[in-house]
Image: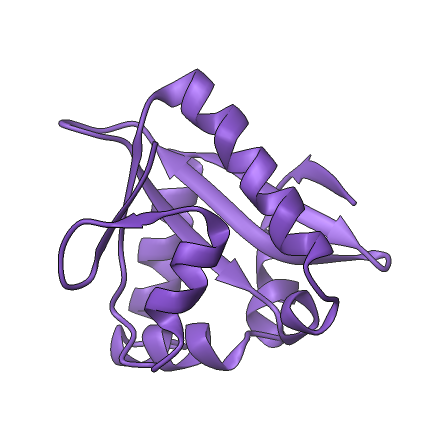
Amino acid sequence: MEARVATWTDVESVLDRLSEQHRVEYEALGWPSEEFLARMARYMAEADTKCLWFDGKPQAVLAIKPGAPLPTTWLAVTKEFYGKGMGPTRFARRYMQQAVQRHGPILSVIGSGHPQAAKWMKVLGYQQIGENIFLFA
């Protein structure tokens, strides 16, 4: 597994194979509309955006955007990410720990009504600080 600077082709590859959790969240936000994709592209262009690769493909996008009071993140993972056991999750957690060293604590707001969303964020290493608000510190 490795983290690589994300290209838009990598992001599209992840979007084409989205996990159920992220598909539910993104559809509520307008995916796959042009407006949604434009917002996502703008966010990722302004962020420290990496793709986590394994099995020869990008399997997750982690974009961390500086902001006040805290940096924020945009996460997207594939079905394969969840199907590979704990390896990808551990790798993503280590990546986020390194990102906290670079950026400070990172905020994530989840728009998914998926029943596993909060559980997945906690497994990734986030602390739930509000109904749909998580902090990685």
